[in-house]
Length: 110
Length: 128
Image (cartoon, rainbow over all chains, first blue to last red; front, side, top):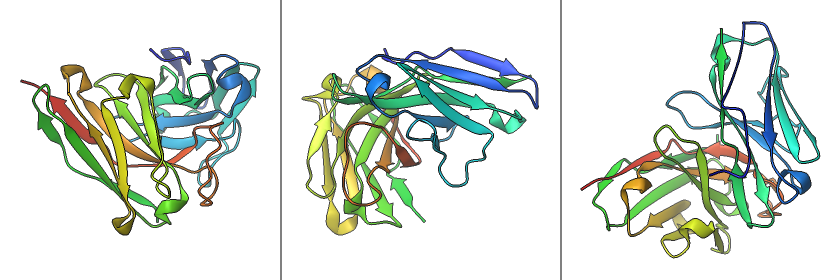
């Protein structure tokens, strides 16, 4: 059971925008940096966002991250069929002295 | 380019041990911490622990303490994860994953989980 909570699924039509939330606490999101990962079916996760809102090279600016208090969000604009995947947030939990991931959100393009 | 290449799938009986390897290339192996993450079928990602390839120091998730051992061989840029006393609920894909924090300085501040490269995964099946 993860300490970070995400909605199980979100969906939108092609070209639209989705926002995925990641809720935690002061021991994790509240005082540490958040990252986001995209996992296409049958593949390893891919690095999307780090330090709350920074994109690694090669990640399009359609993907954005933000953090406020003990919650973080991932936004995807201009939704494409290739964006259909599971998305996970991740951070460090200072109380647990452990890495933690969110429960995961499945994005469906209608 | 950075690559993490893991060993092949394993089938083990309950109570046995498994050792998964992860060969790194394309970067200085000792400059970045390595995490191990697993994913049970149809489930989410679960962090197991990290190893500092430079010092060999480790930090394991409480859930796995006493059953997991992470080691490395710097001469061949390879990290290992051994899990003992396997149970059926250990059936999962196991990933090694490089932490990009520190940009090769070997520093990891334990204030983020910034995994920039992942291995291809190793399926471990535990079945009698």
